[in-house]
Length: 264
Length: 290
Image (cartoon, rainbow over all chains, first blue to last red):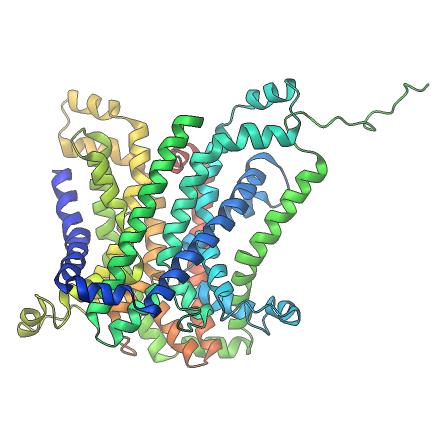
C-alpha cells in the first residue's frame, strides 16, 4: 500500500510534469530544436551555466576536503559553530544569498571595495556567478566527505608512517585516493545543484547576454516572451547534458570505488 | 648535560597528524573561505536591513504587499510540507522495509527533483497548465486557476521539496532493519499498529530533521515559484519574490528587512538541527552516511 501510494504521488508530482516537458520537446521537431540549440545566445548561456558550475564544483571540492579535514581532525575554538554554519546554504533561501552576496561583492561593498582598486570586478561579471555557485554548492562536498573521513582507520596512517612515508606522502598517496569516491560524489552533487541554480545568481550576475547570462535565466526570459518552444528546448538541452554528465560521473565513481575501497 | 633537553623543547610531531604550522594554516584557510562565502553575506543581511535604523526596518515589514507575501509563504508551506511529509514517510517505508524489483530505479526517481533546475521545475507546470497546453482550455472553461495562483505555487514547491523527507528517512530506516517490525507483527500487531507504535517512534527525530530542511526550502524557494507565480503584487508573491521586487525597485532596506525574516528562519533551522544532532547524534548520523 505504501508502495502504491508512493508511486501514485511520484507520478503525479514529478513524472507527469517531466514527461510533459519531454513530450513538448518531441513535438518541436528536429529543425526547430536544432535552431534553438545552435542559437549563439543559448550556447553562451549554457557555457556560462555549465562552465561556471564546473569551476565552482572544483573550488568546492578542494576547499570542501580541507574543511572536512579540519572539522574531523583538529580541535579549535568555535568548531561546533563552524560545523553547523557549513549547512547554511541548505537553509538560507537563494534570493537572500543573492542580494547579500551582491551587496558584499559590488564595487563599493565590504569585500568589493578592496578588489576594485586591484581592477578585479566580481559582482555583475562571470566571477560573481561563480561566487554564487560556490555558495550554493559548498555543503555538498563537506557533508559527503566528512562521515567517510571519520571512519578512516588510523592504523593505515601509522603503517604508512612506519614504512617511511612522510606526512605529505601519507596524505596524498594513502588517504586522498581512498576518499576519492566520496569527493567525486560531493563534486557531482555540488555541480548538479550549481548548473540549475537561479535565485542566488540572477542578482549578482548582471545578466549580460553572451557574457554573464545563465541558461535558467534565458528560459525565464523566453517564457516571459511567451516563446514556449525556445524555453522548452533550452530546458531539454540542460536536462540531457546534466543527465549525461551525472551518468559519466557515476561510472567513474563505480570504477574508483572498486579500485580504492572505503565503504563509501 | 648535552642530553639534558627540557621536556617540551623537542616535541615530536605525531606521525599521524600534521605539524602545528600546517594545522593552523589549514584552519585559517577554512575560516577565511567560510567568512568570505558564508559568514559575511549572513552579516550583511542584518546590517543592510538596519542601515536606516530600527524604525525603517519595522516600517518596511508593515507594508501591505510584504504582509501579503508573508501570509502567502506560510499558506504554501502549510500545504506542501505536510503532504511531502506523508509522502516521504510512505516512500521511505516502502523502500527501506520491503524488497521489490526496480528499487534502485525508484530511489533515483525520488531524487530526480534535486538535479532538475528550479526554473525547469516551474516550467513543467507552465507547460502542463498554461493557456496553450492540453489542459489549459479545459481549466479556463471550468474557471480553475492553477498557474498564477496558490495551487501552482504549491505544486512547484512540492516538486522542489519532494525528496527531502524521504532522503533523510531512507538510510535511517534501512539502518534499523526490520527486526522490530517483525517482532511486532508476530505478536499480533496490525500493519498500521506496527507502523504507529514501532516504526514511527524509531524515526521521529530523523523525521523532524527532514521536515525542518523541507520547510526551510519550501519557504525560501525562488526559481520554481517565480516561474509559476506571475508576480502579481500583493497576490501571488511569496517572500523571496517580494525580496526580488523590492530589490529591483531599489528599495534595499525593504528587501533586506524581508530577507532578515528568512535569514532568521534559516538560523533557527540550523540551531534546531544542531541541537537534534547533539542529542540524537547516532540516529541522525546514519542518515548522513549516504
